[in-house]
Image (tube, rainbow, N blue to C red):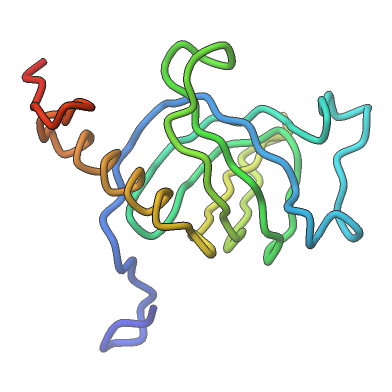
Length: 145
């Protein structure tokens, strides 16, 4: 979004996080972009690290290049990693890709795309958690961890 003086500004606050994730190309783009076996993909999924999170989207680091405009299925895991719980399963659209250095590694900025009501609630819950709000349990009680 452009501001009053032509500068590009972010519409939503982003929170710095460090969470493991995995991603795959969404079905509608798999004919154009695929992760081959040499990439370490398992059933189309590759690992990534979520770097920032906000109500508008997710930023992550990946060792694989992903073109702008591609839609991805993204699963953000709990701190236990790939064996832990999935905090959020969502669909995102790649908005920017920047190579970080010679590793190679890429910083990928995404926006949320076509979320279900359940996914939207999980996004709001995760933002609340990042803002320090008490966590609601299944019974409706609030946990004051």
